[in-house]
Figure (tube, rainbow, N blue to C red):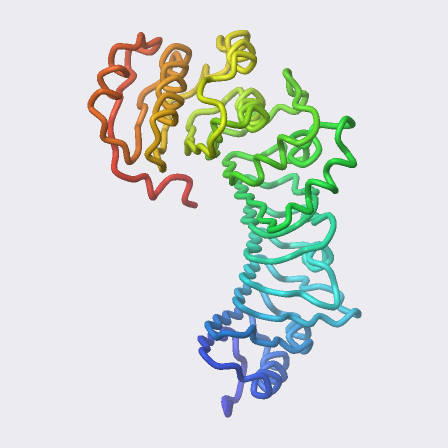
Length: 349
């Protein structure tokens, strides 16, 4: 680099590692007040980010992919940082939690394809958006201003089950992990995270109420009762839920709706979906039993949602299925049933 003067924005796309050059670039950037840093690497091995990166104290926006990030233990934080997204990364020197907590103005956080031993603690008082998908044993989220959360747990050896089992019987994971999200408006969770939430006691009457939560995107594994109970616990915790997207999954096992779950739903059906306006039911597997589950859930929604406007069935074109749907009684006179090919724009910020 021979540029003289401030360097406010830095963007670099790499296919081959440039570790020595990276050190020189970081030295120049740290001296020239860089505010935006975008590094995307597509090589076979991760690119090494030198510790001098943490001397770029004017940073406000960061995106890095396929990187090994070496943080100095003396790191005092990015005091101006508002957005950071890390994908397929390893962080050394400090923990992910410490990195996040050292950025007091952080509003948007994205962490994807990472491994974190023990409990991942996300403490960010000004965080508004959280996108989290990685391998961790346990989770603690303290983000009182969060309005959008997308959370996925990936674990090859399911180590998190041992960690969570130690807390089983004490407190619901739904309450313990999501209980600080008082202002959450949109929530997207993945299948393994539902498995995590289902571990331990699942309260029939959730003590944590998300009054601001109006949109939920959740998978529903039809063959695991605990996952069904955890998903419906989320619905009960969101009395003002307006939009619901459910992706139906089936891994084998039970071939009928569990009577125990149905009995609990019937006891609360009067208030379960009282504000629900739009439902997207997503079909991803060709399975007769799965279609039965979809039909039963659609029937429950049509029977209990007084202000329902649309019930969309995504990626499923079975004439018999829709004939049965049309025969179900509808509590809402405005409810429409439609077959849709995709819903790519769902919950996109």
